[in-house]
Image (spheres, rainbow, N blue to C red):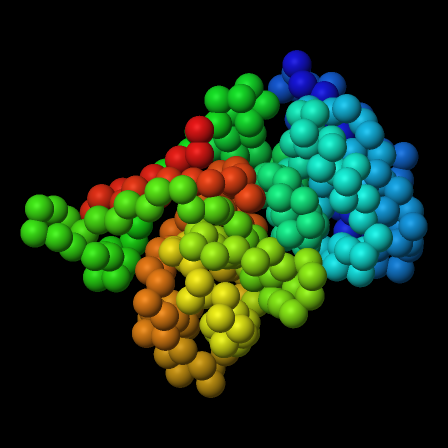
Length: 309
């Protein structure tokens, strides 16, 4: 049994039924669930005012829990970055508390990595994932691996359109790629772009940058990628890995402009290889990824593997 601490560092919890289902699901899985005193607070669109949410983050760090899990994402963490208890968070991580989340949580992850080098986990949120009517089996298995200390990597099948961007050698029958000791970082594209030019964006060179987003039309995704490109961030990476970009609506005047258009354009603008299909983002099936840890990436044909164990 693991001790899981639930807190709300970003937007207010609107779907309280999903919150309750998530707590119940974790308890059914055998975990001890502790709920922060302000987890269901509300101030404007936030889960409490800034001071309330900063205090909640501090309580999560002081909880001694095995996992500190966000209730949801939304918006709210970027306005807290100057005041976050970075030393306390890093100390808690050093003692074994794993901080897990996605979406707006990217701001805390990047800032903590930039300030302390501490590793956090891109993964599920309570309401969206454990509070789903039918939680995803793969998501739960990856979460269990984290709790058991057995999580060593993630694998996925690349789309066929990825193959032409991979290098080939005379000794290989299929396109291949092999990276050693590259720092994994990234998360939500919109949040990451909001950190460009601030002290909260990690200065990662030779890394593996993973990106995802939700409710963003492909032209907005391209515009944000353009910012990272022109800021020199994409060119400093060894690999770019794209997860899920979903819940957007095409419009008639797109006239063929779609997500694949953006991917093709990105590949034409950078020498850094761009892979897609990573099972991560605002989707039920998601792996957990260690933000800040060195990883090894192996690609053979359409089989992609990322190791950190």
